[in-house]
Image 1 (cartoon, rainbow, N blue to C red):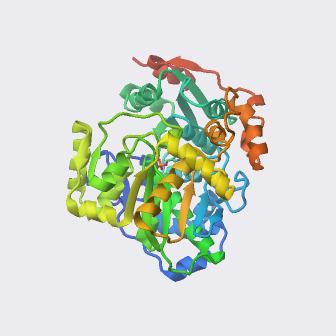
Image 2: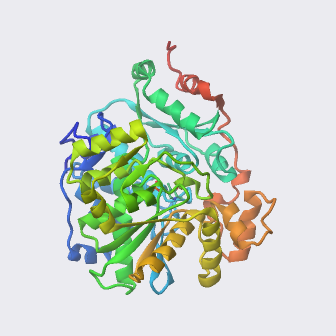
Image 3: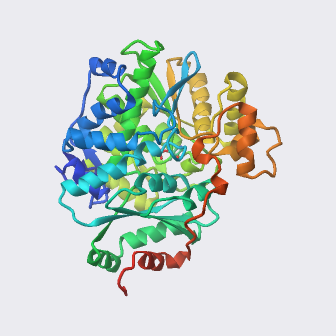
Length: 501
Ligand SMILES: *Cc1c(COP(=O)(O)O)cnc(C)c1O
């Protein structure tokens, strides 16, 4: 399989090159050049497999330049006992027609582990395969979830170092402690006195600073990125859609070939795009339901064909979906426009220049054929957590609850009662302040997130994930703080780079 840029500037590179490079030099994203298809026998065959075996079958269709033993090594290093559930991504039935695909049994209790546990291994092998000698330095700006997942993924992976910047005071207590207690000789965490935008801009500045690049080169170091536009983060996410389908066949909820819906709580459009690739390959999917919070730019886009980021930005109780530019949408537009790189390039130019773009009617119709968009505000999200617990005994985190609320709206609007899988993206214990607010009727007020963990556990009978237990008693190993204008300086000091101007 060869890869090309969505903006037409580069074609024919290997998966290893695409993963090593991350973003294409023309600003586009890498996509596979050929369509991959599987038949129903392939899908039926997955029912007898473990998650790791399913991953092997699907990843080898896309990462054709990786040898089978290399892929196996990546898979076994990623999906190991760090996942607290042996099925890795179990499917839990909520009621007769509705199932939860739980993607949060990894070390950070949120779905980004599904990709960030394996990406470092893809990357290290990509470096070796492309003859690179340098050590890789991963820089991450995080608003909470990505930073910890990347730290866990890269910790003690040979040939890499990871540096995570987070906004001081801008992440939850649990998220902060998860990061500053991170072990691993190659890990670094820096608090920035600024907000998330300052932090992200600072990292972008470092990435594009020629003098820093030169200083790195002299030390045998090279930057790379672990953000969600890397193909190496997207491709592992295709696996769990097939895995969920195979589980439903196995438990007798569906017949092989029966079309099902997936509801995906969406921010950067990575997770739901992986679902689209699964459908494009031949997975029997009826609708992909794109669930947003009050930052509902995607809902409007799916309905009207206009992507307009010029709107108020809301801080919500599902913070990992507080996004106004869904970068991975570019890949869908490329595929649905018949791989029309010029058209995609123009839309992206308009987005950068005017803050909006308008797709043609044909592309809009193709989007609506597959996708249904809806959103849930904070009040509705909390109500959904409450009612689903009361009715079904299932405890949802706020991101998952956004999906549930949008699913309810979908059923009311369409009457479609196909078997449906809700993609559950975080443990309720990770975002417990909101969950406790929804379930504990005022008894949560004034409590810290750590005091709420046992309260929630006692109330629901659900176990606190090992990864969050005793977090407040773990040693703090990262204490570096810098000003928002001092992010470069902090990096120079950390990597002991020679003086730069
Ligand atoms: C990142 C994240 C999302 C959004 O996923 P995208 O791939 O960005 O659409 C949803 N829920 C949680 C808990 C997340 O961490």
